[in-house]
Amino acid sequence: MSFKVRSLDQLAELICGNAPASGQSTFVYRSSSYLTQFFEDIDTDFKHDESTRSWWVKETLTKILDEPWPSPHTPPDTFTKVIQRLMDPTDATDNDLDRSQSLNRLNEILSREGYEAFRAEDKQYYLRHVATNAVSQPGPNPHRPFSQAEVERRQLLAVYLESCSEDELIQSVLLPLYRQLGYHRITAAGHRDKALEYGKDVWMKYTLPTQHVLYFGIQAKKDKLDSAGMTKSGNANLAEIYQQVLMMLGHEIFDPEIGKRVLVDHAFIVAGGEITKAARNWIGNKLDQTKRSQILFMDREDILNLYVVTNLPLPAGAIPPPSEVSIGEIPF
Image (cartoon, rainbow, N blue to C red; front, side, top):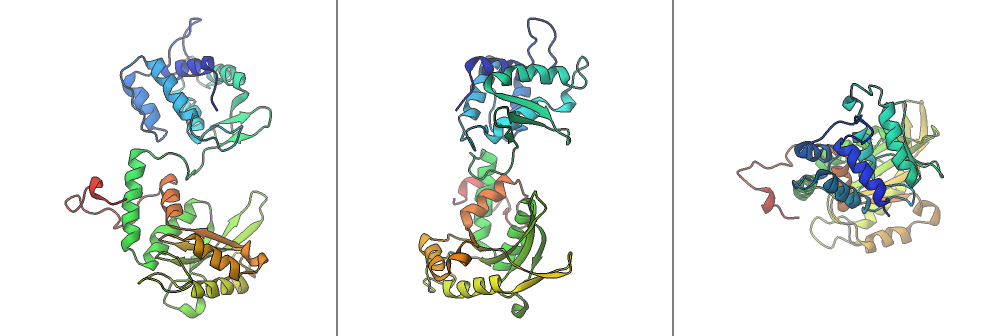
């Protein structure tokens, strides 16, 4: 999906800050280096190639809109970031301090495509599809294309997952990741007192927009999950994980914020390696239909992708000294 050529031409003119024939532009003028900076600010690798600025921006917008759309009426997150960066309040010009003229000009273009930009209470600008009222809001999308810097960070984290312990996986990777994703009251049981875990390495809660609360437990294993038995040194025993999941779903946890004991709604089975299809099927077949719907899997690929798109700093020890290894030598 894409926009009309005329719309892309006009959006490119706004990003470049070129003055319209009718008078002075209310958008900041951007030279070649500032166009590169504009797209760096929204976490992309596009660099101006010294060609005609508006033509280059138009081609860049086309590439962005060629990315997968989350839904038929929701443009890629990167395009929404383009609009937010274009309407940054700090770029207001003297002849449009409140950016109202800029917003009107932008919406003249977007309306042709069935969209409008609006300013929300958080003073950020968002896109809304007029017919469906669907709002585009950038968020962590683990399936989007990665920039070169993100690929390098992903490789470094992959190396770290090869060598870290199970406790380091939980404390240094999973806990920061789930906090960044909006989970709260995250409590790690640790491995010193196994009797108190009741099948959980971590429990946490997530508040829905309706203010209802869901409780989650995490059973984390460092290595690959591939069968019901211990097939290779270090690979976890699925029979043991199965028993731990049953314990997790069957034992209450105490939530001190409400002063009550509650049951876990869903159980995450998390692995620092791959969770094979055979492993997922084995656990699924062992559980009844009700409990099967409560199980969520997250393996190494999920961890790597989510960690990168949420822009979390790498764990301590994940970046080796420059003298030991360079990015190009890191195995993917």
